[in-house]
Image 1 (cartoon, rainbow, N blue to C red):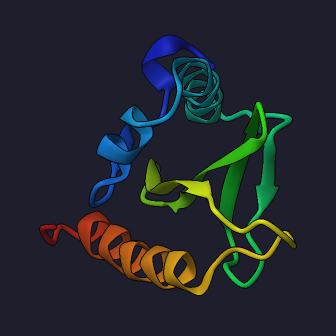
Image 2: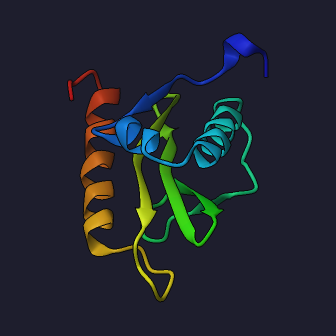
Length: 119
């Protein structure tokens, strides 16, 4: 895919600000992975987010923490970054309900934005 064929990247809500709070190494890795997504590739760190068809999450482990960046590419030719967060759960791999609710809300915002609505 040529550079000018890359999908645009759009952060919903506080996703960009939240990503900037990640450690530099994690920001660099997530940034590169999102660049790959924009080029139409699926990074090794990406996996489907259960319960959200078409929504993917990048999973980055750093020291003893796990960081997630949730995105979707299936809306209007744009890569929408819905949520970036440090996973707080000490046990289990389930994404906390508050994060799931926020992802659901921001997915609706991305859908509205793609139809010409505003955030």
